[in-house]
Image (cartoon, rainbow, N blue to C red; front, side):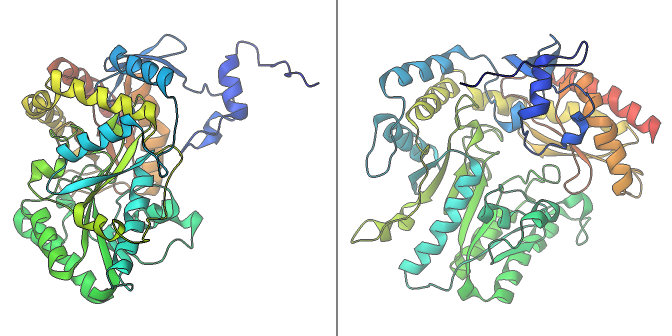
Length: 465
């Protein structure tokens, strides 16, 4: 018989934090930070747009728990939906069988998606949804007589997930190098960072046209008979919230149609109200062939994701012996599906989309006040999804070198913002940015709170450069 060893901590040390240091492998975390006794932040409670740590300190959740907590924390209705479903049917896979909540949610999502995207393939997260979309694109073209179409095109600095296929689609070299060789056939094109446009930097429409045409150039270079899909986020997350220039998404749609290439909109972040509609592509007025989504589907109260596909992509699988040989144990989980349905009910009853549209201009205007600071070069985004790019020189747009970025972001800003009561992201996947993406229930008072904290900490950061 074994016994649990007695936990021994340094005098005054937090036992739970010590256990975290010894056993918890946190994601995307530089663990050396905590190797010499630095306190591991432990979040124990949430209510509305706020979270509390185990020391009783309160923070504004300025990132919605990684773009997820659309309705804020502590929503009893969502907890109750999960509990009621768990009492009835806690788990059953949708491998050749179905259960009511997965059926109901599939119908609901199909009714909300743009165009003829009526087939819903459930996953447990966004990376799995992206992985599923690439696999579907490959098999669809095999079944329709074009087996050489397997390559995918995505944008520089874009993040599409961590599974091997999704990571190949991701455009962040530093995130990929440790795991190479990855899945072959993933091609990169320029993103829509108009602030640093090398071409047409004085004309956003012309820049958008140029950026879209680079997709056509890549298709021609690779050979149209080899390219299966283009993966784009409607508003690109990594690099600091790049909105699509006017006409950009429309031209990408035209290019995909011209070359018989599938247009996959990765809406892992931008769906479920983040940009003011259930799907950002509806707001931008463009119908993709596939949407991948997750995060806000349940407002984070249970893991869930989906690939939503056009009817014609399902057709080869509707007859004969053809099967999409792909799936996940947790896809369409009964509890997660019940939570997602309850979440969508609250969206409707509380007018969440209308709230975002009514206040998105206020969020933009409030964050743009920071442009008077010498360290802030650009504020960009859409809906409740913004990036604030930091610069050394506003006039020349000079950015920070690797050493400066290390000292500024990891050495100061991340901790300083958190200590000041704001959970957000200081990120250098691309040029240094701070990302702000509050819960969709927030209003002007919350925006002012965020701006005040950002202003104070950014002024401190400038003073130490």
